[in-house]
Every structure is written in structure tokens, then in C-alpha cells.
Image (cartoon, rainbow, N blue to C red; front, side, top):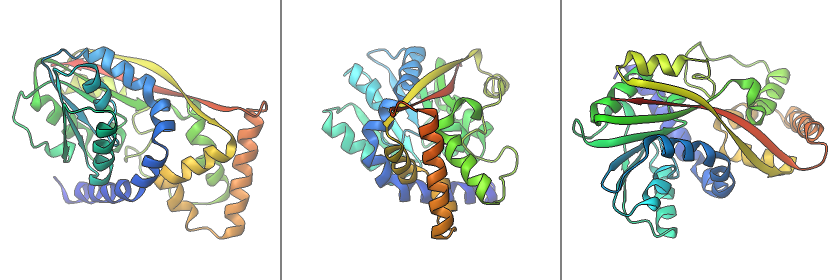
Length: 281
């Protein structure tokens, strides 16, 4: 891997490890939020009793743990770049009495598995952070058995994801900070319609499909929303840490106001939109 891509990977590993306590703290809320996407990935790959499944960039364990819980006969290999996130995944597996999983700390661009190992591959919200998406999908294809499927999810356009944009737009309106170059890793890197389908097609996958899946972030209050986002959102915290207390308080107040204006009934349940892409080797 090229040096600049290694630097991106190492920065991401450090960031995910640092924010893993926040993901553990908010695991129940976040997994409820992301469940519809995970369920759709599972539906598309349709794992069988004897399958060996690879779940890439699984974080605290999903959708790999759910796949494993549905069938004791299948085996699920859960991978992530962050050692600390995988530790949480193992804790979650133990709490749910799920034994048919293994965890591997590894980089998607250098998978430590032999060719044609896995029956199917899942990847929920990983692609937008991979340093080299083409290399990542080609590695997935390498370890996938013929006729196996890859199902992946990425975030849809910003306009359909208020749960992210309300904070980032407020920060942007108050702070002049450099924007990442086009195509750089980030939340909406893969949101352009057809981008992921083209990536899968160019890699040689067949029968590629894409469709939208919606979710609901059930925060209930603006305060819970703010606490959760600043516990798990590394880019948000990185910017806020560089501001003085007066400006930070102004941003907090404006975010609270925007959220409460949108949910005037006092019940903050924010809809999200993701794209789920599936292709066959």
C-alpha cells in the first residue's frame, strides 16, 4: 500500500480506538439505528447453515453477530481496523451467548485470508472510510468464493441525513475549516447515485443492485442526540476541540435550536437514508 494510504489507515485506526468507549456507551441506541441496514444486508446475502461469512469493518460486531445468532451452523469472521472496537464485539458476543464467531484485527486492503475462502461478505458503512476503495473491493472478491455475494451499505446524500448535517452545517457556519479533497474518506464519499454500483461493476461483480434503506435515530431529546454524537463523532470532536468555550456554546445552542425546531413535539426521532449495494462473484 502507498505511504499516504498507510497514513490514512493509521490515523483511522487511532481515531476508532480512541472513540471506542463512546461506541460502547451508546451501542444499544446506535445498533437500533443501524439495524434496518444490517437486516437488508443479511437478506441479500441470505446466509446458509454451512456458510463461512466475512463481516468487514464490523466495529462493535454488527451485522456479523446477528448473522451468527441466526444460525449456529454457520461461522462468521468479524474484522475491523480497530482493536478496541473488536474487543467490544467480543464482549457483545459473550453477552448474547454467540460462540460461532472469530474476530480478526486487519485492514480490508490486506486481508489475511486465502483466495475463495468465504461464501458471502457483508460490509456495513465501511467503504466510505477505506483509503482505497478499488483495492478494498478487489481484496473482498479475492477471498470470496465463486457465486458468493458482497453486500455493502454506505450513507446516502447529505440532504437525507439530518442526523449528521445538523451538526456539521452548524459548525461550518461558525468555523472556517479546510474541506477534504474530493474523493477523500468521509461520511458522504459514496453517496453519489450509482458510484458504488460502478465500483462493483468495474471490479467484475455481476447482478449488481442498489436501493435505499431508511433508519430512525431514536434520541428522544436534543441533549441525548448531542451527547451521543460528540461521544462517537471523531471529526466533530476534532473541530470543537480547537474552538474556545464561547464559540462552542454558541454552536451547541444553535444545534439544539435546529433539532428542537424540526421536532417541535419534543420527540427527537431522526430519519436516515442509506444505500445498500449487492453484487455476485
